[in-house]
Image 1 (tube, one colour):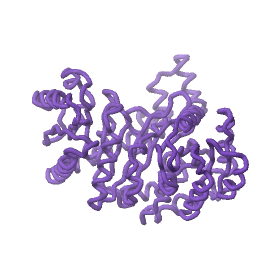
Image 2: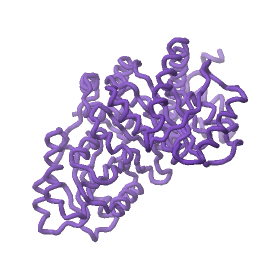
Image 3: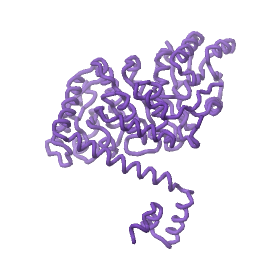
Image 4: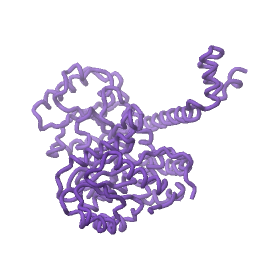
Length: 141
Length: 323
């Protein structure tokens, strides 16, 4: 495959809130952190279904979907999100999970196709590094 | 490890023309990234475009552009139109990053699978649009979307680039911002084909309508058309008067076609695009640090040469022009 020598595209991230979870202060803080790291962040707003998120991510051609979940419904929602990504042929898009996610659920999330899980206590740099490294390892598309 | 691989842009062209959402989205990214590899594909796409009615929506930040666009998408989609949208938001001048929030208002739109909405960051470009906005419009146009709505960044008084990109320019003025002297200033208000006072559910809307109508009565000095811009009120929230806005947009489109002004505008758009592209190529080739450029820069700094001669030398025009 011939990749262009110099690619000037910024990393694009869709920040989404899934399901019945109205708390988006954290998502907004993360959006701001990614903006300050030079990324283009598309914020979708609240109460999205996995299908809406995936279809927006495809139109926006993002590298990463970042989902913050505080509702406790992360296991079924990420499962559905992973299923939608596969069905829509969008498996090149990374999924990064954040919010309140107990460690015992990490494996279930990884099985659903979550590429990175950001623990609650993570500092800003960790979020930026996690995303940057995922995209760098995949290469341009 | 996820790795989809890089597909050559030319391979994507037939998929774009057939309307594949993923291919359209990827092609817009290639245009945004300015990949040299995509030039040929974008040229092919340009040749297939040129059918869509391009509607520009502009106004100050918070005027209600995204909300109006969302209402238009919904209503036009219901009528069976395949609506394309390019929504532009500013990039940070410090980090280069951006928060693109136009989708927040377009909740119901995501459901209307007929529509295609793309957010774009300005990436340092001034004037109200992003550098690849017009290429994104070409791509949607070639893929069969019409109308295509360009939502500019929230503008000040002078970002009027949209007038060189859209057939029909709608300028949104929210009520309650300043007196009637604002309405007679030069700039953004002069470019409107249709004035819309947004948030018509607010009581101050009538005063804004009066100020705009008063301004228009003084006569259109810079008018680029035989069309006289009407002043409408719309409440995107309640949907009030949305139908009359849609009807007026259609009337304007018919007016452009029947008077021949459409061809004049198209020609004007093309001229602007060539100039902008030439400027862009020049800047790209002779960026700071490029050898030729540095040599000329030194010569101009030391006053052995002058800016005009240096520019001529860089363009390779020196000999032909002076011999």
